[in-house]
Amino acid sequence: MWFWDVQKYWKTPTFAKNKYCIFVKLSLRNLVALFKKYKSVLRFLGLFIGTYLLLGFLYAWYLKRWGGSDYFPDFLTHLVARQSGEILQSLGYTAQLFPYGQDQGMLLTIANSYSVNIVEGCNSASVIILFVAFVIAFAQNLKKTVLFLLAGAILIYIINLWRIVFLVIALYRFPEYQDFLHSIVFPGIIYGFVFLLWMVWVRLLQVKEAR
Image 1 (spheres, rainbow, N blue to C red):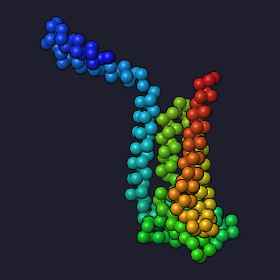
Image 2: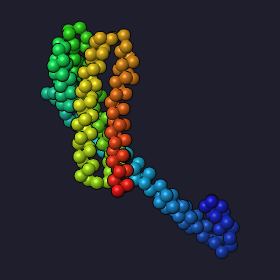
Image 3: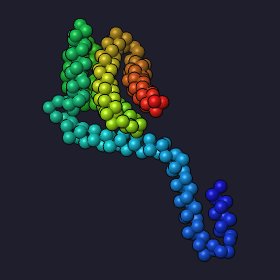
Image 4: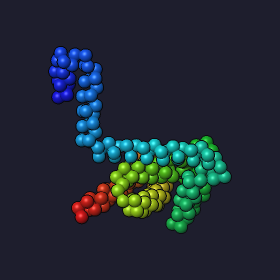
């Protein structure tokens, strides 16, 4: 152990005047050894956290810059709410969309009797940011990474649209299960799909290494 090495040198008369220098040198040596040992883990954490924070900052800037614009409450949330309403219409439901300033969302009403408020947290942006950060943290080939990011982000967006549509229908038909459906089942669908994409990405990297 490096601690006992320091104690041994500390008591040696030859190095009595250089105790501090020896302690620093041994500490740095062990830090370098730890860094080399866990280099891949530190690289993953650095890329993941760095990418997540950067994209989170850019998304916060977007919300501040474009929030409350002509597309209430922001363009992406407005687009998701409008497209969800269009899908419901195509499925034969009478859906109407209204801005709802109290909760800063879009109120999606079905059959003039049940309403769901689609807020900023429903637009899948935060989930896509999480997905992107993980993929970049494991990135190796630029072209493959970019293609997988684009495909994954589009799939997450589409899955999220259908998640909202099925949630609205389920809540309309089974309002007594609102808490269970809204808090457990449908969040599990979107996050489960992201986890599946992560596993596909790791598998693709493993196949490449095997070759």
